[in-house]
Image 1 (cartoon, rainbow, N blue to C red):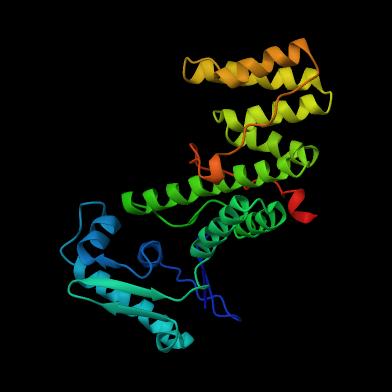
Image 2 (tube, one colour):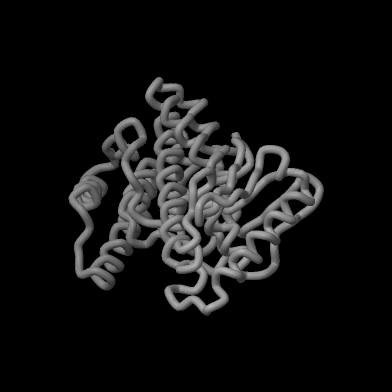
Length: 282
C-alpha cells in the first residue's frame, strides 16, 4: 500500500487506485496521514472538518468516515499488515509502516542528503535530493479541502520542498553544474517572485555565462517587485552582486543554502510544478 500526499491525494495497493471520492472522507484520511503513527483527538478532527461549526451529528458522521476507511484497508489486506487504523480513548491512530507514505520518504531522503553533505559526498547528496524531489507531483494535497490543521501541514511540506530545491541547486553548483540550473532558476524566480535566494543564484549563473545584460535584468525585475509588493529594496547580497556585475565579469563564490544544509526556506511552493531538474537526469 502506498499513500501519496505530495500532489493530489492518492492510495495505491500496487494494482488498484483506492482513493476515497467523498471530500470529507478524503479530508479525514489526509488528517490521519498528516499525523501518521500519532494520536489524533476526535475533537480535533471534528473541528477541522466543520471549521468550528459542527452539526449535532458530527461525531456519528466522523465514525462513519472512519468505518469506511477501515473497510477500505481491510479490503486491501493492509489492516492485517503494516497499516492499521485504531481507536484510542476518544482519538484515532493510523499506523503506517516505513515506505508507505511519500511525505515521510521525502523527509528521510532529505536527511540522507544532509548527512552526505556533511561528509562532502556531493554525488550521493545530489542523488538523494533528486530522489526526494521526484516524489512531488504538484502542490501538497492539492485536491483536499483543508482546514487550519491541514493548511499548517501543507505549508510545512511546501517549505521543506523549497529548502530541498535550494540544497540541490547549491549542491549542483558545488559540483560545477551552474550552467544546467539556469533554466530551472528562471522558472523558480517566476514561481517565487519574492525569494531573493533564487534571484541571486540566477543572477550569478547568468553572470558566469557572460550574460551580464540578463543578470542585471534579474536584479531590476526583483527590485521592481519588492518595491511594489513590500516597499523594500533588494538585500545587501543582491546589491553587492549588482555592483560587481556592473564593474567586472568576476562573480563571487555562490551563497550556499545554509551550513550543513540546515537553513530553513522562507516561501512555500504555490501553483504549478517546478521544471524538471537537469542535473537529476545526469
